[in-house]
Image (cartoon, rainbow, N blue to C red; front, top):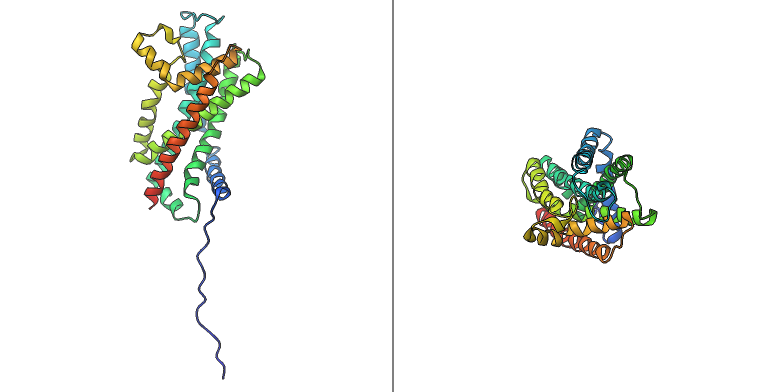
Length: 273
């Protein structure tokens, strides 16, 4: 008499993909998760846009009549590129707060248990914050045009300036990713993020010419990557000679992204282990 083989069938565990394409797919999936939350919390997008609008109105109308910048017919043409650069920098703070929130709620533990690319968790977060930052940037451009700002350098230069601003914002998102992984609470992530952003943006050429600063502060402002970015964007939008500012900005963007993406992913991987 023959007996059937009733030994239990062993099923192999789900295979985890490998390769760059797999990481991109999981990154976009993770980015979509964050983007779907934007319509559910419109207040966050509204209030994050109100702050830079206030900066535009305050600086333009309170200080505009008292600040004369050589080479510019009005302060608005000098100011707006700096405000736009500050807007995308402040917008990158969403990354640290969002990661800290996921950590505090335990959602990161769930993501670690899934058969997905571990770097995709951070890449998806930074991509979604970049796209959300783009929405705030568009609204800021509309407000700037309403108060008299014009892209005197032409459409092509305006596109290049926009790409520089968004890519610089993306590079700073990786700094904020590292902050979000390092702190213990959402409040700490919010405070730690803006603590370094304020000196970065104000000790620069964003609002006043650095030639008027004291010698030691001027040297700090000249070495500030935010000054390099602002000078490049200002020259592009106003049709002035750009010089090496664009290439220096690209070098800063690439360098910051590579260094802090490596540090952030390594920290996240070690936390996973």
